[in-house]
Length: 202
Ligand code: SF4
Ligand code: SF4
Image (tube, rainbow, N blue to C red; front, top):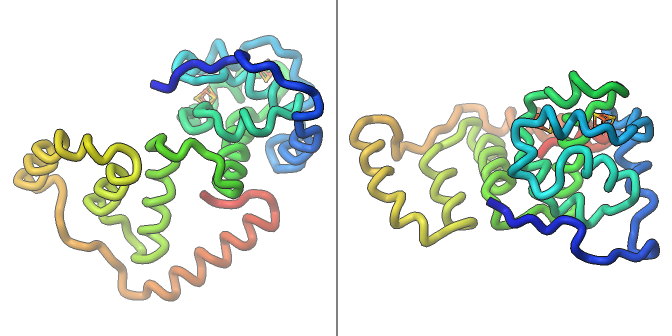
């Protein structure tokens, strides 16, 4: 689990990014960000907040205050399970789950997500695989994930992988569809459209 790094470092106002809140607010779902009353309901409802380096309430406060670097490099949005409990219970109607997605997209765009943390790497490898082949080849995604995040752990996982292979639960065949070019055209068009409207894909 990530180490708690809390508010341990002094931050000067000049180091903050005052435009960050406006940028997140402008993305669909972030409109009501300024209405937060810091009640903490979102953090109390969140089943994963104890594992996050910053709770959802802290993330909302930090976005508003301009702590861009800390927010984008935090583990919090990557641990978010999109359960929507925070969004449903927020007394001010703030779409915290959508804000978590906005943070993830910005972190990927600006390449500041936690690089060794498996979830963003997994999301990227999975999407890349589907973009290239139309389907995901599980074995390939898993191997790339371990190579990029925890290569030494592959040795321990090899026995498990062999068991799954012999039980027919995982295959070596490269999965692919026939009309890959057409799929890529559609996905690239969707990606361009999503980026232009601020809803960029992973
Ligand atoms: S539940 Fe809503 S109002 Fe309360 S701290 Fe979370 S975002 Fe802010
Ligand atoms: S949507 Fe994410 S941040 Fe909100 S309660 Fe669920 S896991 Fe926590």
